[in-house]
Image (cartoon, rainbow, N blue to C red):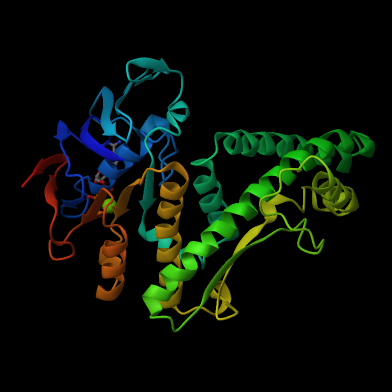
Length: 373
Ligand SMILES: Nc1ncnc2c1ncn2[C@@H]1O[C@H](COP(=O)(O)OP(=O)(O)OP(=O)(O)O)[C@@H](O)[C@H]1O
Ligand SMILES: [Mg+2]
């Protein structure tokens, strides 16, 4: 999959951007605070995902502008498609079209333009909090399965209803047996999400294994697996299961029921997929607890490249790689690893120093304006 043309105007500080990138490497060069990340963010938003740096919709429009517009034309094996997005100050409704057809929300774009975004924060994924790793897996698996997005939203909804009820029970405002209504639904959805995540982690592990070997010349072994708070002691194999409404939902339900008293004491749901983690180990030792900074970074690189490989394997289309400021954070060996493993894909790399990335088409960003040089 390649992006043929990107236009952006009024999105944060971007002004009149209209570029035709190369099918391979594109280097976005510019000093600090010129608009490099804003540009990457504008492209990323066209995937239908939320901003990777948490920008809220109301902050899309440039401070001194009345309108933000983004347009992306991209081509996969089958056809060329066009996404247009516009938001006006003071107007809630956004104009979003895919091939001229109106869509109600940005998230409806999901599944069309496929990108993998990689930022310096991702380098800390193995060290950071479990919710960063859950988000990584959830986003990666969502890009491959729309039903998974619905399941995650459903789970969030049921969980917040259950937590509200727990608070009421705590204060004597509701009877405890009302929990069961939510538990049954939470168990079914949670069992499905656990299976999708575990299956994804298994797939990820297959790829990261050989990628990590490449970085360490086979001297170290990286292992990644899903650590489920519900199933880890059950002996159940989750990977590839399709019968999530049966025995797996039962086990989930039993666990919820068994932890109800703890939950009421704590004031929230203490077990479930919202408490799970993705464990990374190098030669049997937890990267989170014992990994050196270099090992953590290498594991993160392997995970990100693997994410792209899995998209290619499962959809037949290589995603567009958006590497924001990552190369400058890496030593030469790891830079080479990233560049050689993204060959054959369309890549956008932002950096401040032109020595960081050479070759490809070069664009310069100055004060929100971007042009080829
Ligand atoms: N809504 C907005 N309107 C106008 N400018 C904005 C808006 N939001 C952010 N900015 C500005 O955009 C500028 C460029 O930000 P961006 O993060 O893209 O820089 P960058 O080129 O990636 O810099 P760095 O190399 O430091 O990462 C910043 O100075 C920021 O204050
Ligand atoms: Mg930046």
